[in-house]
Image (cartoon, rainbow, N blue to C red; front, side, top):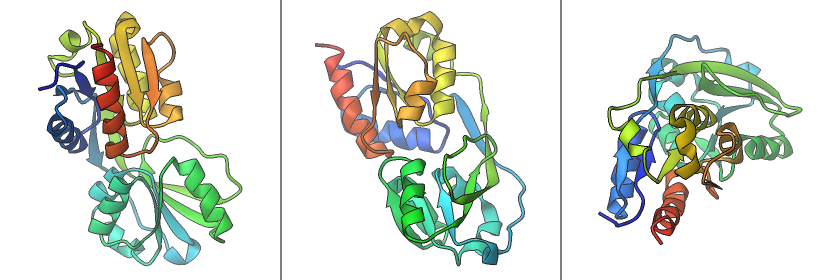
Length: 228
């Protein structure tokens, strides 16, 4: 393992294990400490004729959406991040575009391409968008908080880099870390996630793109910077 700072991976499974494996392959001291768990929920597919496109902001929607996703396969998918796009393809969708920043930027692009009625496959707990488009939220999964792993307290007792793949994760990591944030570095998937974490961190950084590859490239820099 690297001599750099530990990297605390807080996202739900199966993403947590995948990120840890990628980080360790880069030589990082990656530690799995998921703060949430994702699960499928019941939902009913609407008439696709009422919508122009699907917005998918998390791979969990494609992974946990279940058999009902087949009824929506005729709609083009606009996905945030390549991992989400890959999960959508695996679920049988055609991906029209992949957003490299965030959902807001992707929606702006959809408006310019003539898409007006957007069906958003999302989690039960979600944020809102500022857009002139008609965005209909359809929750197909839930992400619930779980007790942190036994190693969480020891992991945040010393300098480390905390990886936050969502605003909810960032906010909960800050709450659970408490005063320890003063010696922790937050690496957030988006500016919104960084804002949700609040102040007081030793350092906060935002990934240049909303995907694992970009986050881990930045994590390499931050983990080694912390030991200089």
